[in-house]
Length: 289
Ligand SMILES: [Zn+2]
Image: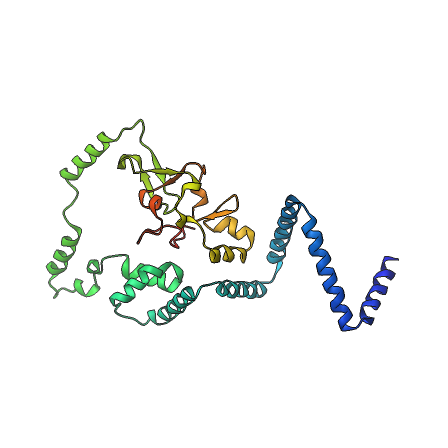
């Protein structure tokens, strides 16, 4: 009987004109929308989470090529949300990355560009790691080991950079700092914005605690940042994006470091403004994974 019904319905659908089909589809969509709106917020969120789980399961079953294509589309969609300035920087990053492999000498503007954007592109990250994470004067080449080369030049260069070995002065300083530390109250914490390790021994301002509502406005996500979050699956946002959603307001904070919204631990600089120049805060675009 069901089978007959389905067959009859199919036949009926096929007999409709394209205009009728569109009208029926629109009516259906409007009815669905109305039905969705009549649900309680709990019911809506329940349906949403069932949908997310079903989508996740469905996604995992896809062949690798389909997954890759889907990812590409998502990246394109995210790109559409970028501001003009962000698009310009993305294009600049691509062009720097394309020629970086062939460079033998990095000029100052390139080093500065790498310093600012190295975490946005793997090629930039590699170049920054190998070229900028050590002092180039520390390099030792095989040529310097040749017998005819005066080794003392290399030795002096390296030993001048290293400085004198740790001695009595450093040991005394260490002892003094340790004695000054009130061991009964000493506290170690981490800034929920720049993830820097904080010590209560660094004075009164070493560890700042703030209520979430008192945070400077720079902690809030901009409209375009919030919109970009909606293009990502919910489970990605929950597991991988460093954002805290408090009563529907989104903050640039590391959720793993927020234990109490009335006592958010911050360093002195982030507490004042996480967008302070050179501050490696989440608000400034740093991602601590
Ligand atoms: Zn901080």
